[in-house]
Image 1 (cartoon, rainbow, N blue to C red):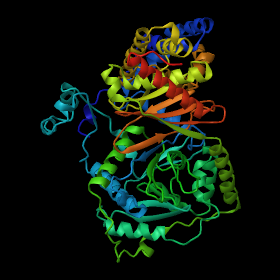
Image 2 (image 1 turned 120 degrees about the vertical axis):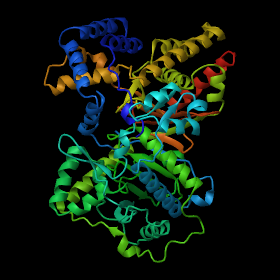
Image 3 (image 1 turned 180 degrees about the horizontal axis):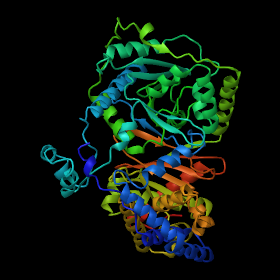
Length: 617
């Protein structure tokens, strides 16, 4: 927390900048007549009630210097959503396998991951976790010398010290909710619950819930051999799967689940639920072996719903073959905190594993009394509730298709040599691919962290622009009309503009969160919304057909999430040094396999042009 006090505050953009950026993002999505109407409505934000909303937002922000203008409304947006968290909100990120194959055995890897997770938690709570910093010039700032120096700079000034060497410390307020936390369903709006005093782990297997302590009374890590013995005890429990697996309720509509949770409490299950909610985190031990990437994606994103507690802040899922992933609830935080945790756990389990293939589970662990299987009393209404949840769950996940694509002809290194942004090229390929498949340019979303600011969350990069539209049309519709040089210049133009949008978003200078916060403010005051918000074009740009998110890390094998709209794609992607990978989901109204063929063709064409060659048909 060394930098936390001195982090800069998330700026509220100027109203005229937001309007200009909004119109630039709308231009490729609208014909001239629609655009002219939208332009008039957007300009009307600069006067009257809408302008007052902006001014009130600024004045409220000045009174709340301990946080950011987006933090409260963003929590509320997530927690008020009534749809199931499964598919709609929870994403997954899978771990790379341990480079030493014998360490991927399920019990061994589970033990090592639990130990490393607890080590991370203890480092975090004791204030010894190294601050998260984005280094623009690592040779200067990511050094022992700089770290020694910055230690002596008071916390109220430390951010400025890092800024001087082009390093940007990131907000770490979300880490508080990483452990011992759960989302609790309530009518109308859920609550986040955290109890840092709890010392136990929640383990799920075959739909049963077990708990055992991983910290002793002094807060020290229980011996790894004991943890291994307890997990072995759970893995060898012969009890048949429950007829009514309770975890399915966490996949329900939030109001339905809130009603059923109240019934659970009324039926005398308070103590068991408290154990679930306060557990350090959830470890799901699955009996299935993963066949391929697609099977892994489905299993880690949703599974069969029975061996998951989707409301926990995060769950570590381990398949029988040791394939591991994190599935996390999204309201409490964004990918930044979870990715840091995942990176540290992967590094620790592979470099300093607590147990090895020759380790023996502790003989004196007394697992039969240390491990408690939670029993729940279910009346007829609760049993019906579980059965209905199962039907709803199966219906929802049966509609989801996931497909993956690897483009092997180049990646980050080639693109940087050609002086174009790797992320811009991937996004251009999605625009080009969609145009080739459906003949349209549609609302597109790329998330960008604003963690460089106190209580920052995310901002939206809008990858569809007049530049990507022009370039996509040239490549897809009329490649013969343009010289290779002209096509290359168009790609460079897209790259330059995408770079600008990314920089603006990371600095809190997008338009989406600002417009969202103004609308939220009007609603919270019971005011009529300005006409701008009634514009069909505003609804359309927020109906994100191409929802995209990227991450690359030495720990992560692949990540994924479902589309955010029924007629959309959920595009998880990573631009690696020598290849580009996409893991994409869709519902029946879109063909994800064809989309990926079109994206692959687009990448081939872009790389061909960057090499100075003409595009083949």
